[in-house]
Image (tube, rainbow, N blue to C red; front, side, top):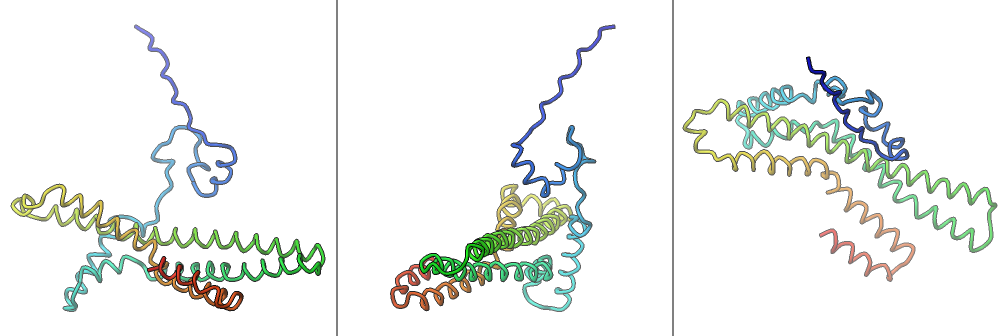
Length: 240
């Protein structure tokens, strides 16, 4: 009998104390087991995010649109994976972000005017500074919510369509499968569906950015006048 030496324990991966305190509310793994990461320690996904549930949802939407005889059945079934309630949440958070962007210049102008003229008390100035900080915090949180909900919508569409592609490949005959190269399937799943995921994440910026440009142009035109035209023209060219 030969006694085996004790197995070496892998070193625990740690991050900085401030970063760990900041991200502890984001990552459930940091609130759960502190030891070795196991499958039981992973957070469970909602049932609506399961690949099989998304596949059945896509197939049902595809069958319905094929029976209706409407064109572009695959595209319309894909759009059904981008849940409208999430798009509504994204739009609301985008409007909150735009509102905080538009309110900050007025508070900054009020603070600068009081500092130049010497009017207003110290408490009023501190209140304005606190309000500006609160608006910045709300603006950052709203942008995070826009990206979070958008990425979740895109991930659902990507997972559902990836499952649909896999399910379709398993049902094809050998001759049909042989006509497809592995690079074509990888390109469809890894690249094309990744573009769909990114488009869902940044979709609200297609209308939020022009609205922000109109708001900035209006404020600059009222406050500065004709001198704001070069800056507005540069923003328009950048947007295009």
